Image (tube, rainbow, N blue to C red):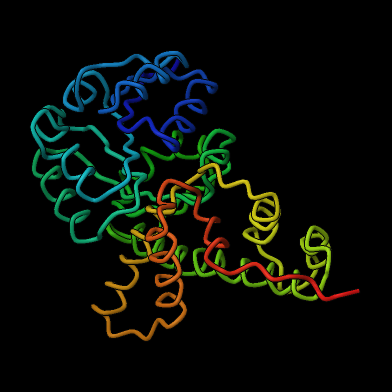
Length: 293
């Protein structure tokens, strides 16, 4: 068995990571604030410890998968956090989608202790984490990236995009492309319904053409089936869209598609659907009756 890997955050994504790591023969030492998630991870074979600090004491390669920038900050620099316990030579890989300024702050604080930090947000969702087919976009020093590569390549396609922060910047590009596409696919579904077209045939029909996308192939069938069980929460989609909005403001960019998607997701959350999957954005668009025969 390989050297133990630490993992902090055992929710939808974290559980997928842990399943993959365990299946590859690695021992996983983990922590989550939620007792239910700790129990579920323990049932998978994760050794549960009492805090992020304890994870850092037990392992020298630590993954983090939490839902907010505030949570990552707490995991690293909070009470019983990684910063106070990690030894020199440890590598921390943050798979979360978080603010670049905080990413750089945490990296600097850890570097002062001889600990490397890699921002490595992912795309693909829990099934891809479990299958090892994620897109992983990474920022960090060349030395840290190469040291982390064997583990990261077990989880998916691991691409070094530049220094610390470059992974999060690339994830913003991914989210601009992906999350606006959620809304476009939902519009396309409603358009098909309005014309009486069998929407279930659209993904296969469009697969060879330029209108194809992974979002179309995966998400339209789920929209049709109204399968809104979360692979990722609508509230997290809105969080990412708001980060994109702030990035556009900071860099004086026109981002009208992101603005419209943000409006639709705010409407979805306002209707009480924050815990549904992001594809539930189709619920915001009124259903239409097909044309009379």
